[in-house]
Length: 361
Image 1 (cartoon, rainbow, N blue to C red):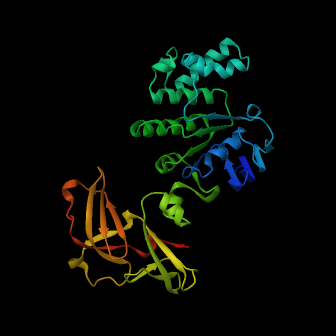
Image 2: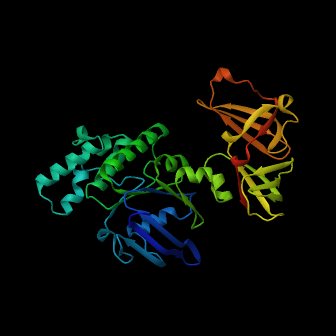
Image 3: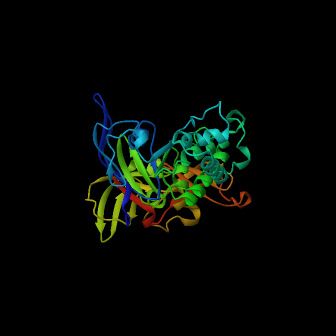
């Protein structure tokens, strides 16, 4: 990081009796970035966020905000605010008073409250809804009120705990765009918790993928997708084909793997001969041809099979190919009328050496 981190976690561990929820977490978050804690239910991501907020105390470890150790400080003394999954809005107050609530607790003047709340409602595009009751709002509008109420106190860090989980897909995608816009306009650091990989890849500057209380991998969405460092990461982020095998030889920067249907070349090195490995190949990196048109042309990196199913998914088409070693997925973006392959066709799935990621067990 080129600038000092705004959040620093050192050795953060959280245990409930004999059960460890978080195990020795080290993490630095840059000022002004959107960082997403991603992972399946029970991986510890929400607990980690609550420790940053001060709603949970870590069993061991330290939490620093702007270089100050806040490990033992209560939530109200930390320069953070949190948007919860269920929003926690006050139904007996209108939109304006919900957003103004924190400012009134701070004894701000009426004129300052009016100016600040009006600006914040304009920021979240709810200027016309100031006098509406919470019960009169849609889910997306209520989410924006919760966001405005959290931002109105100008926190250094905004924590968002699966805030879009209750919204339908179209509104979720709209709200992700809104969050990115608001982030650009405010410059506030966002820490976002989700189990949804699409939310994470659309929104984040960096993703922290968690599994069983530990960090599996940290990187940009592009890095995480293109170069997963573990089998868990390869499977969790997007669709992927996993081919099991063993290393049979290595030459320069190329490793040769027996995948049970011939040998595959991988543009990686450093894995000992005999190692049990997996190859991760994304469906869009596969090339699909009819067997009779290519048979005998390749020496490496292909599997022959039969198309079992063709799934039309709007802008893309997914082919499921049954092979002797695995079910292979292939996808492409193409017009419906351009599809030339169909169920029952004998095909060859092939890929380039640098399209596969070699993962050790």
